[in-house]
Length: 344
Image (cartoon, rainbow, N blue to C red; front, side):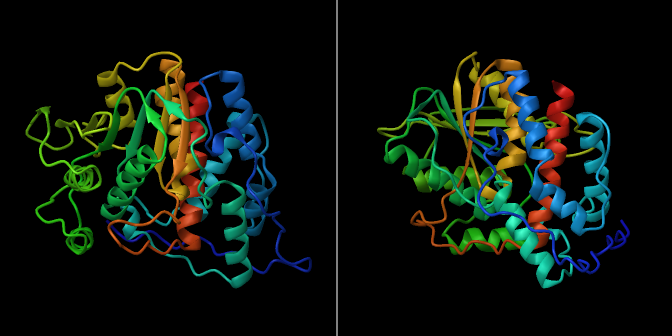
């Protein structure tokens, strides 16, 4: 695939200087927190996040024209704008994204906006008790940290009536991810779900599953697997690799894994579900969970990021989060909110 052209870089901020963004986190229901599938609440949350001052400031800083029309038109316009200016992946995996060259004032603006839009600070769980706890997969380092954080939450008072579900796919690990796992003492992992399985064994002190199930369909996009552990003093921990809903085009993504898990777990109306990811992904993965779990099943969703102040049992450094990474995930949030709005 040819390298996509560089997106336009922002020009000078003009006589007035950079667009100001106030500090703090925008108090919106779609930056995390416990939210049900009530359509009116969700539409209001989408509108408040999308039409917020921090996002308007970013669009203006990148010389964009604010879209006009109803909420659907606004979401479509911002999707198109972010594709032109903030998509540094070009269809590649996140580690392969380019980093844009931004001037210092734009870098500060991006940092302030990311904080205000809920992509920076970790928040504690909103409730003391949940029906289920979901850990979302990712790169190898994230797999280790998120599973360890889930175990930390359970040890420090969060109660789960059902199961802990660790959700991933058969995405092959890169050489860099294998190196990360080796530094943590993990060898023999070939895929994301292997990394998650190893993380469960490390964090929960287990060695072999009590139950195993799955289908090898001859292609990783069509196959699935389930391994359930029963740690002492903990709810069951299931490691689940989902098939893709579009196997001819791509591997399973976050929404695929959530839907697949919900069918296995028999999610019920009123069930409160806690999702664990990293703060930078909270807005987009929260909206994906609202679309795939809250709307069809009537469940409550609370999405939190790993607290960086938690002691790290695997002692691995956190990757540097750059302005380009934040802009990319603001675009992911816009797209996820557009999909949620369409579903409503």
